[in-house]
Amino acid sequence: MQKKVYIESYGCQMNVSDSEVVASILAKEGYTPVKSAEEADLVLLNTCSIREKAEYTVLQRINEMNNLKARKKGLKVGVLGCMAERMREDLLEKKKVVDLVVGPDAYRTLPELLEKVGTGQKAVNVLLSREETYGEIIPVRLDTSGVTAFVTIMRGCDNMCAFCVVPFTRGRERSRDAHSIVEECLDLVAKDYKEVTLLGQNVDSYKWRPTPSVPDAGADSTGSVDPLDRPANDGRATVDFADLLEMVAIACPTLRIRYSTSHPKDMTDKVLQVMAHYDNICKYIHLPVQSGSSEVLKRMNRGYDRAWYMERMASIRKHMPDCAISTDIIAGFCGETEADHRQTLELIGEVGYDMAFMFKYSERPKTLAARKYPDDVPEEVKGRRLAEIIEAQKVASGKRLQSYLGQFHEVLLEGVSKRSTEHLYGRNSQNSVVIVPRVADGVELKPGQLVRAEIISATIGSLKGRVVSVVNEVALTA
Image 1 (cartoon, one colour):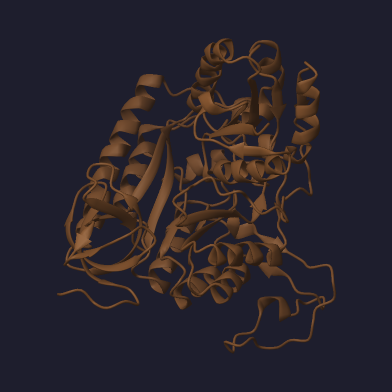
Image 2 (cartoon, rainbow, N blue to C red; image 1 turned 90 degrees about the vertical axis):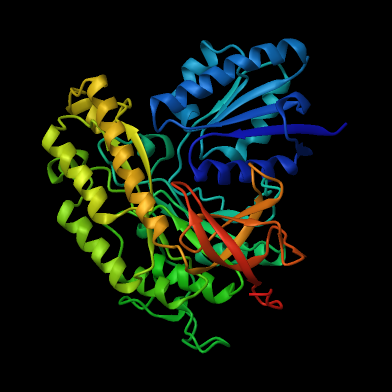
């Protein structure tokens, strides 16, 4: 009898990527992914602990599973990811609906754990690892569009930002074998994917040393030297993030490349130079600032101040004047004053972000902030400051999108617009959503095509375009 699994992902792109690794592991055990919990024999919730609200959403979903279990005999429910590591005891003891709890470094043990669940027992493994990268596992792609995909290049985080629970739920930083990353990207090309996003909690600290001896240096067929052939000072090659970007860009010239997430203290000019050099690397950087106040950044343990961040911004603009920037901002961190808050508002205007993820500070257990700083900004003040940040960012986003009017952008079409089946949506190199007609000059466009479009209008959240040509195909009538 065929077994069916439904995997529901919450939180960051890393969780989406992890869910595809889990699907691959379970495929070898005879499980086929399905699109709803009602169809499944096994429901897995891949969870996020980054904010209290994210955990609350998952807990509500777990409660809903009680009703489904009552209707569907034999259904098993598991919790994966960051909440599994952080709340394992509560999930097993208080949430009787949960049969299985598995942390982000323990997915290989799923077959044994499910065997234990099959005997009527609860099963748990939340051990963190210093080595696990799942590097050789080819994920089962759960996004049926077949246009874009995620590839995880590293796991964990060593930064210990005061507000962040990730080091406690995902463990220490470790980088994946560079060759396995390139091979996975080549597999995407073979399967006709058009875009990849390289993922890590802090991609700029990616660093991998191959264990074999370094081969003789030489150029590939493009005339470029493989970064693995560049000896380090000790006689062995070290591949950093800039090298990895270049390796993927050279190996997969037809694949558009994005990455997330960068850290301001680690982003180098070398990365910016590689981005500027290769056309298939998208001109978009997500660079979380968190606060515009150097005092708040110091308490956050971010490792940079406002001046450093602005220097990085200047370097980005120098190398890629057309590069888009997005960010993360926290309102109401411990000890934040009105003056600190005003500095954040000023920074938003000064940088001119294309987009931002904005949140009220939420104290997380085990973090430095929870241990050291009182959560002393009242909730109503946090809410008011967040509203002001959102309003400032709306203005900045509007200006950025308006600046694209009249320009011609290459847009990778991803799917049918939610508002109209007569339109498709895609993204330009700067990661802005662009809406175009489904039919242009009598030619029906399809997801996966790269089109050249003139930007004719802009809203707060998206652009509208007039398709001029399909790239590498006959031009449409101008």
